[in-house]
Amino acid sequence: MNKPVTAVSNLGAIDAAHHLHPFSDMKKLNASGTKIITRAEGVHIWDSTGKQYLDAFAGLWCVNVGYGRKSIADVVHAQMLELPYYNTFFGTTTPPTTLLAQKIAEKTGPKINRVFFSNSGSEASDTWFRMARVYWKALGHETKTQVIARKNAYHGSTVAGASLGGMKWMHEQGNLPIEGIHHISQPYWYAEGGDLTPEDFGLKVARELEEKIIELGEENVAAFVAEPIQGAGGVIVPPSTYWPEIKRICAKYQILLVADEVISGFGRLGSWFGHQHYDFEPDLAPIAKGLSSGYLPIGGVLVSDRVAEVMVNELGDFYHGYTYSGHPVAAAAALENIRIIEEEGLVERVRDDTGPYLAAALASLTDHELVGEAVCVGLMGAVQIAADKATRRRFKKPDDTGTAVRNQCVNAGVVLRATGDRMLFSPPLIIERSQIDQAVDTLRNGLDWLKDNRG
Ligand code: PLP
Image 1: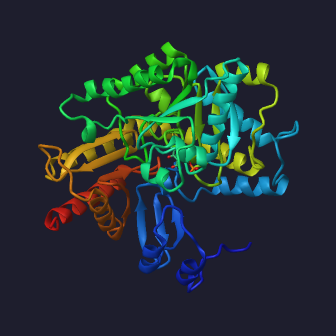
Image 2: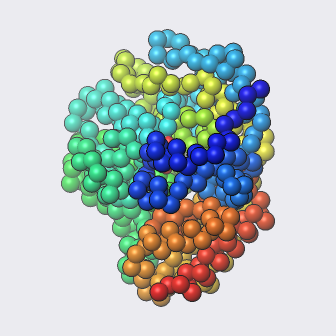
Image 3: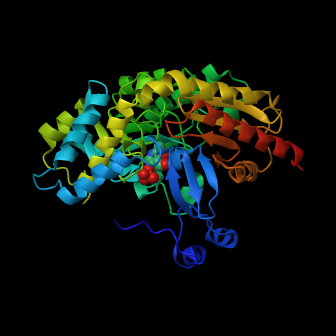
């Protein structure tokens, strides 16, 4: 069998000359040099110098079943030989595509029974955005086109995805958001809660949704979108009052509730989907990442019966789709990935064992003088760095602070992510307790380093 490409001596120089990386300052990256990842197994990755790292971020929140799963490779190989591609446009499907849709529907609540496939989370954002508008139009509500999203949210990098997201610095680079998208506050109590209790703050920011609906006019609003736990924004775990109030408001005004499950789907929160953890049923829900554990690109939108019945019975053609919607090889990889999650009880393991263990380990860091808060649901956690804990004052340059601590951790062999001054954990769902200890101890050392070098 052919071997994968690994042994090229001047790959760094080739990369600098030819490869533009996503979300990267290329001048800085070319000066510092790209890290070349050549191999992975379980929760570990290796770079081209042979250095091993514990990947406490599961790639990019996605390698839920861990690296090196031979059974996924075998299924992909077999599917490639049997049927490497066919489309799902003109009255056709392929066995893995249809069986995957069925399998996903089995994991959702009783009111979600259909899936529309994409290749990524960003495409899934564009898909539900169009679907929401089409849904209301098909029902004769032509004016219901406006969508409410949240500041500091991340919903992808396509034009609709980046517009729905609430990252100001992304908007500034491309005249975004596009027309018809509005942003309300996020439930980030630590930074924005002031003197309110977390519970009161949760209610206050949830009620901004109601205020925005009234301001825009109920007859003009199509949907509200939010991540169950804001991920790239810094693992912003909402206060307990937040989701019940959002649920109440969406029901009162009959607007579509969209849960972005791209990170929270497929076990990350100790439930199959994040909306199950927070006890609500979305009308639409983009998925990706853990659907295939990143082994092949695939995403989609969970479509509730409420929306599907209109799509199926009222709409006629939905003029939307991707050449690779429901790609048979990606679908086969996803099916095998879900089979592994089921067989190894990974959702239950996160819920009952490793999730609470990580939460306790992160909470133990709050005795550190530079830790303002630690939050964790399932295997999605964050540690907030504080310059002064008592007043919740932050360092003057939060991005530089977080990046410096992250670099310390990476040099010590543990890959984490920093969003500003929040240190994020999202390890593969197979991580063991001793590996959680290693990751959290490494972060403690990084925080000690910051204490000694705070300048
Ligand atoms: N939605 C959420 C919540 C995400 O975290 C991401 C990616 O990180 C996306 C959407 C976009 O997914 P993709 O990068 O697969 O396009």
